[in-house]
Amino acid sequence: MQGYVRVYSRNADGTNGGGGGAGDGEGTIVYYGCAGPIGEWTQRIASLQPTIDQSVATMYGRLPGANNGNSNAAGGAGVASSHERIKIGFCTDLDKSVLVNNFEKRGWNQVNGDDDWHFYWAGVQTCRNIFSVDSGYRMHDNQMINHFPNHYELSRKDLLVKNIKRYRKDLERDGNPLAEKTESNNSSGTRYLYLDFVPTTFVLPADYNMFVEEYRKFPLSTWIMKPCGKSQGAGIFLINKLSKLKKWSREAKGPFHPQIAKESYVISRYIDNPLLIGGKKFDLRLYVLVASFRPLKAYLFKLGFCRFCTVKYDTSVTELDNMYVHLTNVSVQKHGGEYNTLHGGKWSVQNLALYLEGTRGKEVTDRLFGAISWLIVHSLRAVAPVMASDRHCFECYGYDIIIDNALKPWLVEVNASPSLTSTTVNDRILKYKLIDNILSVVLPPDGVPDVRWNKVPTADAMGNFELLIDEELAAQDEAQNNSNTSSHHAKSSRMSSRWK
Image (cartoon, rainbow, N blue to C red; front, side, top):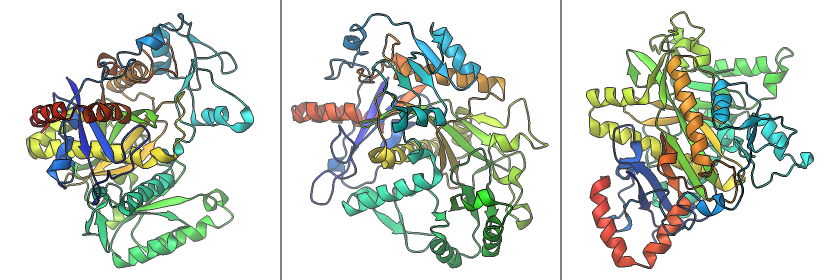
């Protein structure tokens, strides 16, 4: 049964804390999850909430898609009946069978971008062109596109770090307990106790002096350099000496690398104690669907997977440049001599959970997956205020997460266009289900794109997605509970035991 956990945080003066989104009370954080098997992560998210004051933590459940004070919540029937059946035209920049097969299965017809289309699965550049002021293009109510206009606020590495830092500072300025700090073990000063999910990061060349200052406090540390605007492991390298960075900087300014000199890079403290399985490093690729940023509506696809390196992990200086040891990207590993084309170096999240339950215990494993949900939700809340939340848009982001040997998750990066290329049979099945489930969640029950629909899918429509956060449903419950306090306390008492 679907449900969710709400956690309230309040400032010292008794007012709601936190950067609440539109349609939600200031500071209200609502996490949705499912009761059931280990793959349904967020059912125990409350275990990660700061133990601030039990009187301000309320947990209760509901059914997404049921009529919970919203006339359109039960599938948006009012909207669906307001228009006749439309012949759907789709177009896409990507020649991927997992896309086209899903579209044609629904009886849609492929059209060109210049024709009258209803659903566009576009590349990021096409999306920018459509939303460009110069294009003069205006979408009508029955059109949808798969990117938000400024999706790069989350997916560009330097902007992601900037937005998360701003989010923390805003919470800190407001006196929100989520911004509480504690002594740091591996860097100077303090760290955020509950929002420490991104490695220490600087943007180069702008933050070069700050990076040098941090590096000199820990001269034996390793750092990883990444170009801000690239993906699939391109341009990434590790450094453990300032001299190597200075050499790179000199070469970048030379006549043979003019393109590098114009790029911004992020340099992050390397997670040098990753959790290893079979002696090999791996990361998680998770798919997160955002139907709206204001109010924030986000879903987690439960069929994520691990991506393994092909060479056993080695921290020695001689292996610092061996990307088969350090980078988990399939685009890198598939060129290695040890790459296995049968399984593609991938492992399902469900298998990871079972492995961790057997080696570390169920309680610790549940806490890890709860921390991952926490990380995703707060990264989305960090960018929500600056996102152009156009109702024609939705987006599926690819989250890359590293787990260290203390079972702490770290957000590495977020991809706006996660690969739909299938490297194995299981990969193809997974990505076909992903696209099918995305369409079921973002489209009204009658399958016709309509911006007037309130984007509250039924439980059946969610497929392999589970609801992480919905600020609109939270606001409805807030209003309902304020009008019926006694009922609220009774429900809270019943549900708190269920979600622990």
